[in-house]
Amino acid sequence: MSTQPNHFAPLARLLHWLMALMIIAMLFIGAGMVASVSERHEWLIHLHKPLGAAILLLAILRLAVRFATRQPPLPADLPGWQVLAAKASHVMLYVLMLVLPLLGWAMISASGEPVMLGSSLQLPSIVAANAQVFAFLRKAHGYLAYLLFLTVLLHLAAALFHAWVRRDDVLDSMLRGKDRG
Amino acid sequence: MVDRSSPPTRPPLSAGSLTLRLAGIAVVVAAVAGAFAYVNGTLDPQRLTPKKLINVLETNNGVHPGFRRNHAKGVCVIGHFESSGEARSYSSAQVFNEPRTPVVGRLAVTPGNPYAPDSAAPIRSLALRFTQANGQQWRTGMNSMPVFPVATPEAFYQLQQAQSPLPSTGKPDPAAVPAFFGSHPEAAAFLAWVKTAKPSASYATETYNSVNAFYLVNAAGQRQAVRWNMVPVAQDAPGATAPEGTDYLDKDLVQRINAGPLRWQLLITLADPGDPVNDATKVWPAGRKVLNAGTLVLEKTQPQLSGECRDINYDPLVLPAGIEASDDPLLAARSAGYANSYLRRTSEVSQLPAAKQEAQQ
Image (cartoon, rainbow over all chains, first blue to last red):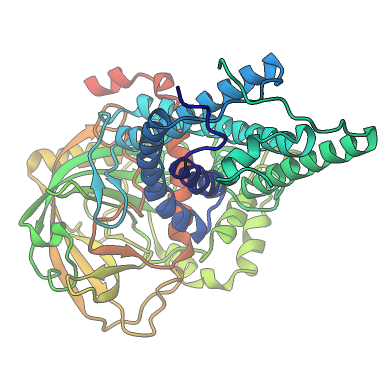
């Protein structure tokens, strides 16, 4: 049996940092566009939709990469509650990065608007037009986006805690492919 | 996990170092959270948000759950658009290139109170959703005034605030609206129009104007700034005035449509270079080239609480390929504000009064 890797696979690391940028950008775009009546509103909404579709595709790819590669283990001395928190927050991140784009797609479908990713690129509707279904999906999209933002903050704080307080290899395993010298 | 990596052998941190490091983490997290709170408006209370725009309408009109927050009283209309082909060389949109496009529309009066009398304001509106064969849609909300009173969402908000009831009296300050217009000379064209405008006796005899400018874009990518008008084929005898009662528009419409379909010509005015495309308060000079793009044919009406138009948000920025928004700042604000109103009212569908009752009328 092969030994546990010290680092995430290169493709997993690339997807992690690419999606980290995209998801944080997406959260700020979403929060900004619903709080703006200026031209920014329109500009941001035209970014939000194709970026959301790209995140959905990458999240599916990332899930496949997760199952196809080996992950470095958590430190052996990590307290049980932190192990649990790490695993639960990772599951939460995966679920939300898949569910939020689908909710966005579904809510536009339910509003009866065509789901346009650009001026001509149209996705099929995945939910029949229905006002009450729209209202439910639209609110779920907003609340779960805030939940994702809080989970991302927790994830960021935990990564820094590993790097600065515990000084273990957890952040390093996502940063680089070689052991620290 | 069975075999975790070996424990680190790092020396423990001093209390001071630990505090500093934990504080560092707190600073990073607080910076990201703070930036987010600025972007979502929490730390930027001065910013005009869609929520504020709709809140002021609710303050002025009262909250009527399930209804649109503005133009609350109206009627659904069903029909189609027959393209003349005249706009074909200017726009690649299917609506101008196919002979026939189905339409679900809504005729309305402007107040945000769904129980306002039809004569409460002289402005009527026509909103349309064209559904193209390729699935793309064109949504437009038109008004019977030729220009808008203000050019920016901020000024629109201030105009609404000037009409808000004062906490002390429960009534608007009678001096506030004149004071607003005194400091907004851009409203001159609107005020000149409104002085002579009378509440019409019929939806069918009104001209409905896009007010905002858009671009038509043809297959070669050429952009032409335009405004459009729906001009009625039916005309009332001069001097026809509104009858008694508060709900005459619906009755008149049903009566007319039962006698035969109602028609409007879609006239598209092409801007000359230099005509203002980002300012809805300004009329374009006469003599501009006008396309007769086709005929809107309305064949039946439906009550607004049970009809197909109820759940449509007539967002003027839902556009097919071949029509694009101008940089008129009102367009983005309309889109953002309508979305907020739409979420409020779709959350309240179950509170709508007597939807079934109205359907049986």
